[in-house]
Length: 598
Ligand code: GCB
Image 1 (tube, rainbow, N blue to C red):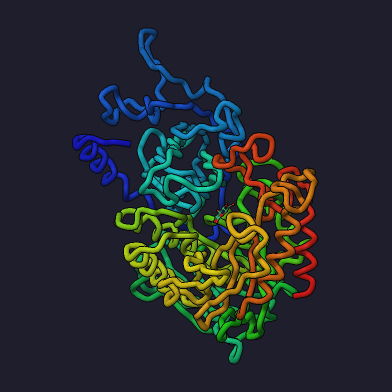
Image 2 (image 1 turned 30 degrees about the horizontal axis):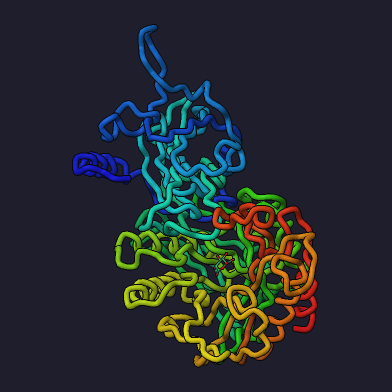
C-alpha cells in the first residue's frame, strides 16, 4: 500500500487520536466476564479499498466505517451493510465464500450489538477483544476509529467504553490480508493465507482498575514454592488481590506497589503436571468485584547437557508438527473440538509433544493440549526471508512474541518458545534474532528458547550444524529433508555432527504422499515412498548424538498455494501422515512404532 506524504500525515494524526483506545492484552479472557460477538456479521468485499480511500488515494471521512444510511431520498451512499451478505465469525473468508478462495485484499465486516443501561454501570469498562484477525485490522465502534493492529495470530483489545451508548451499537472492522515483504510473515510462506476475523470476538467486562495479567508457577522442585505475580492495568499502590487454590488450601492476599504489581511466594505441594498426569488446579484471582478463574498446572522444565528434563527427569519429545487447520479439509481451526480431533490423532501416534507451526495457534488448542497431557512448542511467524534490516519488521516480530508469551505463559504444557523457522544466515539476521531471543528470555526466563535452523554445511554425506544463533538457544533444533528435497536413498549413509552441548530436536523431516496412491517405494507421491522415507529417516535419526525429540512434518495435509501439482497436490502440501479427509497413510504406523520404542 503506497501512501503519499499527505496520507501519512493524515494517517498518523488519526492514529494519535485513537492509540489511547488500544490497551495492553488482557490475559485469560476465557476466565472472565464476557459477551460473545461471534456469529453472523455482514461483510463487503472491497477490492480497491473504496471504503477507505477517495479517488485520489487519500483516506476519506466518508468511509464504510461510518455505516451511513441515506437520510433524504436524493442521498448517495454506495454501500449498505444491512443488505450485504453474512458470514459466521470466527472463520476465514476463503472457506466461507467460494468466490474468495484465492482472495487477498480488503473485506469490511460489520456487527450490531446492543448494550443495556445496567451493563454500563458506574465504574465498569468494556474491552473489545479479538482473538486474531489476519493480517491487518482497522477497528471502528459506532463510526469512531479505535485503532489498528497487525499480525494475524495474536490477540488485541480496545477499551471502547466511552464510545458505547445504550441500545444499538455497531463495530466495523476493515480486514486486509495482502502480503508485503516487510511483514511477519513475509511475502512467501508455505501455508494458506487465510483472511478474516479468524478467532473469537468478545466484549470483556472489567472494573476500571483490573487485573491485566498474572503468572503462577512452580519455583523449583526442591522447595515446592509457587511464585505468584499480578499486574494491574494501572500503576497504583494499595490494591489488594487475592489468590485462591482451594484444592491446595492456598489463599493469599497481596497488595500492589506503586508500579501496580505484586508478588508472593507460597508454600504448596502440588502434584506435578506431566503427560502421564496432566493435573490442573482450579484457581481464582480476585480484585474487588472481579474474580478471574483459571486452571493451572505445575511443573519444571530445564536442560542438562544434551537432555531435556521435565520435572527433573529426562524426557524424549515424541512430537508431530501441526498447522492450525480443521481436521477435515482446509479452513482455519478455532475451537476445542477442532483441536481435540487433531490432538487425538497425535496421541494415537504416541506423541507427548506437538510443534504448533508456524505461528501462535488459538488458545483453545493450547489449553486442550494441556488437558490432554501434550507438551507444546509455540512459535512466531519469523519464517524464511524476513526483512532483517527493517526496524519496523523487528518491532512487529517482537510484538507478536510478546503477545504470544503474554497469552500462554501460564500454560504448563508450553515448554518451548521458538523465535524463527529456516532463516538464511547473515549478520543482519543474527542481530535481529539475537535481539529477539534476548527479548523472549526477558519476558519469560522459565521456559526453553529454540528456533528451527538448517544444516548448511553438508559434504560427502557428513552434515554439520553451524549456526551463530547457537549461543542464544537452549535447545538446538533443525529441519532436514533427506529423502525428499535432497539425497533420495542416501539416508543410511548420512552422519551428523552437532557441535553444541545442548539437546537436539529435529523440528521437521518428511515427504509427500497422496493418500490412496500405491506403487513401488521409489515412486514419488505413493504412500510406499513416504513409508520408506520414514523408515530410513527414523533409523538415521537414531544415530544422532543427543537427540532429545522430533516433530516430523506434518500430522495432516494442509492447504498451500505453493503446491500446484494437479491430481496430486491440488493446493495441498501432501506431507501429512493423515490426508485432508482424515485417512491415515502407511507412514503413520512407521512413526507410531518408532515412538513405541522410545
Ligand atoms: C519446511 C518449512 C515448512 C514447509 C516444509 C515443506 O522446511 O519449514 O513450512 O511446509 O518445509 O513441506 O517443504
